[in-house]
Amino acid sequence: MPQFTINLDATLFCGQSFAWSKTGDTFHAVLDGRSVSFTEETFSLIVQDDAYLRNYFDLDWDYPKALACLGGKDAHLNEAINSFGELHILNQNSWEVLVSFILSQNNNIKRIEKMYQALSERYGRKIGQELYTFPTAQEMAGATEVELRSLGMGFRAPYLISALEHAHLLDIAGNLDYQGAKELLMRIRGVGNKVADCILIFAFHHMEAFPLDTWMLKVMKHWYPHKDGSYFAPYAALAQQYLFHYARKEGAFT
DNA sequence: GGCCAGGCCCCAG
DNA sequence: CTGGGGCATGGC
Picture 1 (cartoon, rainbow, N blue to C red):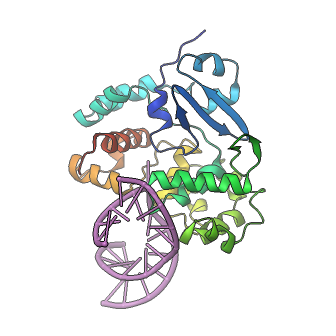
Picture 2 (cartoon, rainbow, N blue to C red; picture 1 turned 30 degrees about the vertical axis):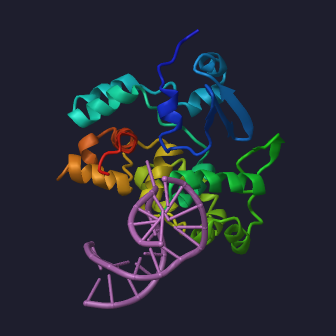
Picture 3 (cartoon, helix red, strand yellow; picture 1 turned 180 degrees about the horizontal axis):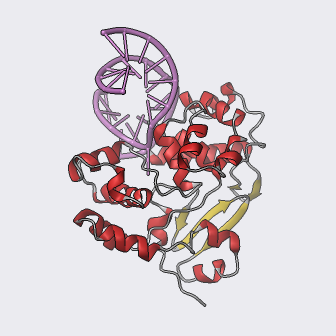
């Protein structure tokens, strides 16, 4: 059986997905309606003959090649890569990513996870004790702004309504290049430059995306003055995720 | 208890 | 095009 070198802790808890939890040494999530759980030891067995999971975990992309390129650029990237090993970019359900990163704006990760769970319990399907699927756009179709506000979505409620009205754009965006897809996604209210870039990475694997949140603005200011995402080409998205996670975990700039 | 959070919209200059 | 206020809510 092939052994994979993916760092599961870094990959699942670096802020690209809000679906995962870990109890003891068991990772767990509900992915596209299906409960998935494993440990470090059982991961290889679980994904071995599962095309969906192999794609979800991005197991066939050439990480060693990309990391050799990025690691040779400078000390900050080199340290982040040495610290995390292979942090993979997940290939997630695009509707889930769209909703998740609408929720993310002016918010903190703990509360994003709670809001994600609130949507699952209200609009998703119950598939076990305390276990719910994340709702599809079809399942959320009847939601109203008042209802979403009562669930604690706050000022993001009307953005979620707009996302529901434009959910069909995701199918089109999936077949476009980076720029074309970005322009399409930004027609949704509440999807600006940064949220669009997150969707383009975490749902559509566009490596030229380079989202600048509050943490990455600090990273660029202190570590990469006078540089921008093009410095990390053609792996800007991957570099961004390493630096974002590294800066947060190390408590840099605080 | 005030500041901040994986921002965006809107409006003024 | 750029800058700054407002926005819901809760974590810390």
